[in-house]
Image 1 (cartoon, rainbow, N blue to C red):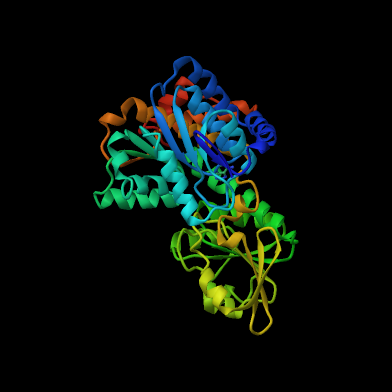
Image 2: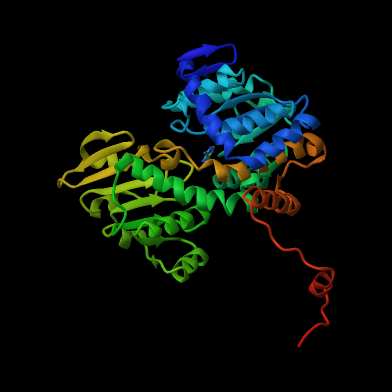
Length: 421
Ligand code: ADE
């Protein structure tokens, strides 16, 4: 481990490699580039101290640059023990940003890093999964009074925060970045769809064509994954607990059934539910020889790994992020990335192009909190439709597409209730 005044990273010598990765990401994040150029002029985060707990990837490094360009001080940790890209962490450290993160942490290391980043005495917190904010509301509550507001990146984190707010336990306003249309309709769908397949393929090199691919959960993430798996020629089965996405999956042309029925049919499984115990002992008992199981939800509780371990007579690592569990009857089950986010642990997370919009939402939400947070209640806020529309418009423009504009007459028609047949 390499340590400095404000960093703890695996190997600072990886910084040159990190620089190349960040260059690549930056060149594919034009919306953030435009916001950075403007931020350098307006300095909307002057005097702010931002503590972030979000996957340390090349895309996150570009977000960190934007936040710093706007005038804020920064300290950062990863939000998953397996997702930090060590090259990027090294580059951030060499550039002088506060960063405490490395790939392959224990749970203890993970919280040590969060606590270390809190020493900045943040005025703003940025979360992906709510671990930082829960820490500030629990064991590290001495920092809560100094925080003006926070942001949350992901579905699971927003659920936790809404539960905190409903219980009256939230002490400062939080913006649910995840719920922006320009986040969840793109990042969660296309980002998760592609990066999850990328992770499964990097960990296995398995052929998807002709395989039975079981996706648990048909929310934004599960539906994106199902669409991409089908595109690669897999026969996709969906499992659900909610009739609405269940029905949507049927109409989208997928087979929908209970996990108990899908378990003996699947060649590859991926959970995307945000719920614990989706794959458990009685599923492992009836899976095919060679079944591959993985998770793309935020936490590693969707597959009951304890039960899998108890059932195994032997375990060996076949290749990076791919462990073979042999059952008493000789069947082998392959668990990817220890049941953690397979897209970040076994691949590089979502592509830069899609993180461009998610992180533009993050940045604009931090700016809103810096300006108005003191007057906002301790609730979970959505981003505005104006922000969503503006970002979608800019993204289209940077991609080289233009859209039509309603004429004056069409605008009048759109609100004229007397116009009929
Ligand atoms: N979440 C999913 N993909 C990501 C990425 N590339 N960077 C940061 N957070 C992510």
